[in-house]
Length: 270
Image 1: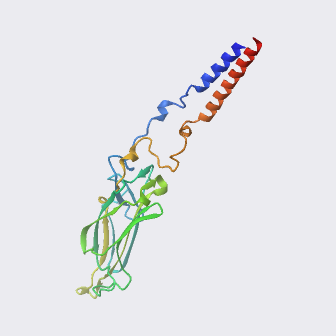
Image 2 (image 1 turned 90 degrees about the vertical axis):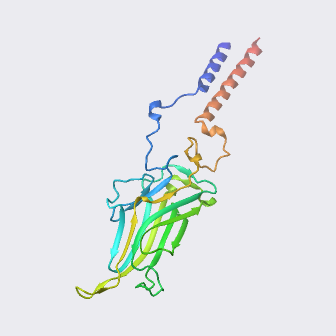
Image 3 (image 1 turned 60 degrees about the vertical axis):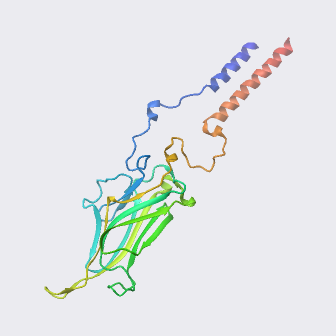
């Protein structure tokens, strides 16, 4: 009888020994992607292929972006409708937490010409133009938007900043992918009556790419900690973090029950 009890205890001990799953070498961390944010880089840059595709990421250069270093549209006589959506590519790969009371800071460099102001009778715009607008999205949710009424003719920097709100502190990976939208409508009225005489002004819009147009995100340093995770289940039992814990505990209880029953049988035979 005692031999049976010893075997039961041995089985319980075997069940309680932790097992290392998988190949340790296969669990090594992958090399850091420079297009993703990290502890040393929280600045997002804008890119465009010069045709139809706009995107952004955290690397200060991109070989697929136009060699001219800018996106540009021109129109001698007519309306330019700028509607650019710089979605992060690749998608945001991890969860991020913004700093409480932190501040987003951006600076876009643009070059504009023509008319974009309605109702001032100083150009050809007739309720068909629009000031520069910049909007930041977290996935499908609008985080911030602003209309810039002080834009001047020519090349200039457009700085902006806005505070972190409680509603937009958490960015949950690709579901909260950052998107920057830039819109503006400009109009030109340049006309040539003959080889010598011309009147009016052409319109153009250009936005510089790479390091000249950027958005700095106030990411909380806690985001880079190895065990960081955004979760609403912070009060869950710690046993959920140990795979198979319930099975091991049940097996141990079963083993102890066998041992107690065996001991009682032994005492009954004495």
